[in-house]
Length: 83
Image (cartoon, rainbow, N blue to C red):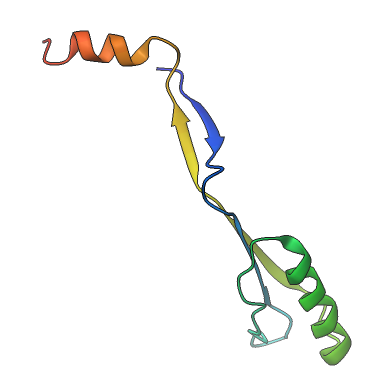
């Protein structure tokens, strides 16, 4: 069934970065989680200024909702329990 996948607008996305600079071990400093990319980017700039580290692993998380095509609910209801 061709469902449409959309971002759940009722839940805020999450942005975060972790410093992965280092030769043998990573720095590991973390920005914290924010609902917009701006504070994370500012944390990266500040961390780079303070440490000289320039490599980060960025993470973005959100929630997805699958929307059935029109008429799917009626079709599922009428075929429920059918062999």
